[in-house]
Image (tube, rainbow, N blue to C red):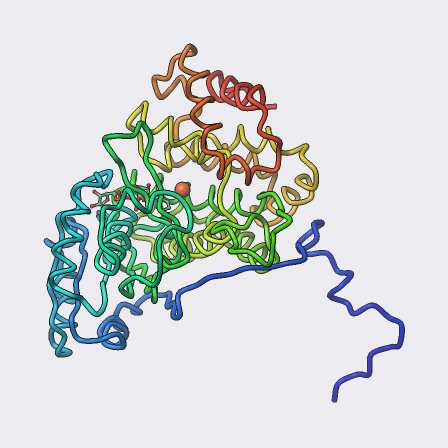
Length: 416
Ligand SMILES: NC(=O)c1ccc[n+]([C@@H]2O[C@H](COP(=O)([O-])OP(=O)(O)OC[C@H]3O[C@@H](n4cnc5c(N)ncnc54)[C@H](O)[C@@H]3O)[C@@H](O)[C@H]2O)c1
Ligand SMILES: [Fe+2]
């Protein structure tokens, strides 16, 4: 029997703050795959889930996988289930847009009912873009930016083999275009895969540096999502892909941080630790759900020019920047309470915990360590500020001097 509400009393949920101190935003938005499976053994679901969409399967497969027993298991499993599987594994690092346009034309001729994506974030992003091209034709340059995908793409079933990007659940894919200085994103709710199968078994053999850099990027996703600005959305218009802080996401972002904080260093130090691999895969998945709705902000805005300049992995740049970004945003309105929640999730002061995690997993401490020179900082700041959508999600106002101050501290290793 349920107790009668006491007349005049506030329902508990209206007054109990979320986490330690901060309140949930008033409005929420969440766009997700129809199915998400996570845990050891879930890859066995692949044939059943692929067959939901039809018989013709285009498998977009990370090249590393072709020499492993997983290839036989996963591709053979679908063939044994009577599916007509064609494999594409010509994934070029950094995803140059020309290679994808060509792959898209081939895919369009094949006419797949479903695209199965197996691999790291690069392979998953490639599959998402091939699914876009197979449905709507090219060139990809016509879709750069937000909300320019005209309708549903070929359904994607995504199986990540790294733990980090969250691409298996996000509405975005990133490519490089020789005509542009920075990597460029295509974001649309239509790019959210139809299903995600996150089996940590697939990540057990990930090299330490990939574990470290993709894993720290996931923690950055969680922290940037949880500290995102809250927007006053126009609820009568097409919503932006990334909506800023919202009510459905906050608890997920915190959970992501709680899984990743203690377990990422363990996964790097003990690659065969099955629980660590599980926790990091789960944290990365939750981090992807979180930032896929809210967006990310300053670490990512800086990483794009930094990555282009230093040719370093995405997560190395975002992870390196995180302690300095936390110092930049901590006095922004409402942010102290959010960081206090993250402190609880991480079991200690967030900034210090991140510094410690970076040290343990081999993320360099300063921009100088990456070979960046002081005279390059203004140009990095200028390009970061040009990422207007990312900058807008930061909880601080995007003044050029704030960016320059951030970069100088990251250059010199000054923590406040
Ligand atoms: N779409 C998104 O939401 C999103 C988010 C963040 C980053 N990204 C993009 O994702 C890319 C980075 O992805 P990533 O960190 O997964 O790296 P990655 O996909 O580039 O893979 C790194 C290397 O690890 C190999 N690899 C992958 N899985 C392996 C395994 N299980 N065992 C052994 N080797 C393995 C790959 O073949 C590759 O050589 C970047 O291009 C970034 O722009 C996308
Ligand atoms: Fe990222």
